[in-house]
Length: 356
Image (cartoon, rainbow, N blue to C red):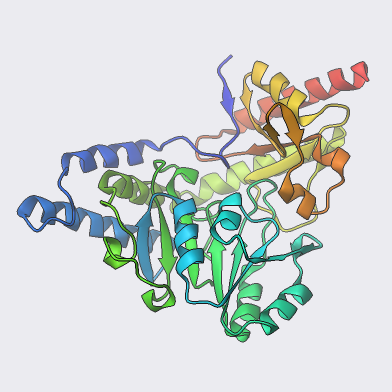
């Protein structure tokens, strides 16, 4: 049987349209910062890609192309004009690397604790608050528009990590937004920091209007723009696959599964599911042998299974975390893929029950 890829929250296959756009970009090999005709042609293509990214995302501010969401987060967190950083407890590791001294905001009922946020905002004159839209391990959504009002009411800036949501749902009302191309069918190695006003961050010199050094990745930017062009018109696919994932969760619950954050606001492109009687590590082996690429809700390091910091922050019991895997779909996922996974999950769960 052919393999089924269900790890799109990690990275998603390159869309054919993005591949074709990148090939055209490789023909424009000149440095976009060069003043000669070849450089000007490359610059024109780069700026066209920038405008297409803005249009596809519905963004009327500035766009700084980066090597991905992690670099965009590093720039936003490190150079924002703020005197205190705050981050939610469920952010991506790159957020904690970019702001190692930040105040960590705990979760309350799967959302950022509003009372702790209010207390932290009151103690800072110019705060920067980093909160993700969609959690990459569970699909749980944070109410960013509400949180934005709270942050701005205290004179702060909101940085939203939209790596899992950009091109799939509308952008939140944030001052800085990070996006990643390879999460939506674009190439790896390209992303962007969206910023309402350049005055919100300190410049660094170099390219990208003086806010990021290094020769611009023109083929990557063209692939990014092409992937977003397609993603922005894929609403029917999103609804169909999200509906299939919803039905998948119902089948799995009936078979004894626990869906993490089942009652919370979630993206139906990511599901974290705990199987009775079998560890996440053992599940990965079984699913891989059966032809399914999924990932764990906890990470293996040096041969030992370490509890997920994110699942801990969401308040999951250790024994549930140890049995949780992540299933995530993307533009290439079909309803047949999801049905096949349900059958495999039920079969493996029955084997685990019999062995127990």
